[in-house]
Image (tube, rainbow, N blue to C red):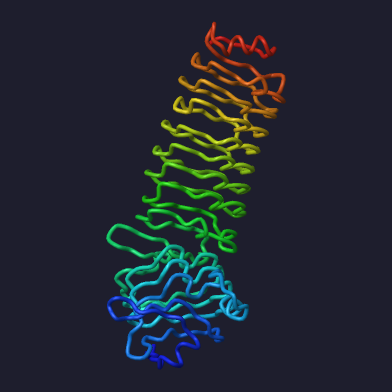
Length: 366
């Protein structure tokens, strides 16, 4: 790319910029009318070394409608050699951006530089860039073992691998229309949290593998993934959020790891093909409608669980529930709407036995 150097007088009509302590310039905003842009490598006698946050974003709180419209319709942006840093959300919500060219001198980016960009077709990088690279369909920024995920292109095979070392997965990484192409998700070691609604309504998703070290699945992460058949949960998992797997109607099996501490309300509600589950003793309370209207036939609650809320509401196929002596409280609606063949299996003299007799549920001593 041929360097573009603008005279200061002419540049002010198109660009906002400010000096930096090292004598270079930071471009802080684009206010021109072109939709295919090459950022100047220099203005006057100074070189451009940074692009500031929101510099091309229509979400920058602009007062001029024309500038905002231009930014919304940007098609391509070329960043010149010499630029070392891109600020946070620099291209956020540039809804028609299709091409981006990054220089070999680029060293770091701020947060969410491509937030809300769904149309990008290519990001051009010099061969052998020391920091930025494509790892499968994912554009990454690496500093040693640390990895930042910048963007993800649609993957024709439908198999999406999150590269190893990513400290977090941006909630927007698999935004529409990519989400409708995800068949298998494999998350490599790195992130501790699977973010809220990451795969919500991913219609083709069938299998997911989550890594050791991940501790939390946030609310609605797999909401209404109607073709999800299986998922591998790590032993490190401590929390499953509210409605995390609700309406996963083809999910047939879920192995909840020992050490899991919290399950959110309605986490597995309406999982119609889920028929057998074991709740580990590390979960002290089985929450409200956790498996409501699911296909459960058998539930085994392990020792140390103390409280059952209305977790099996409307499970018409439920026939066997195994409860430990540690259970001290069961909500009166815990088994409301379950079939007449329901049997509670529990130790003699336990609270579970008393509950079964008070609610006219068959009881069998274990």
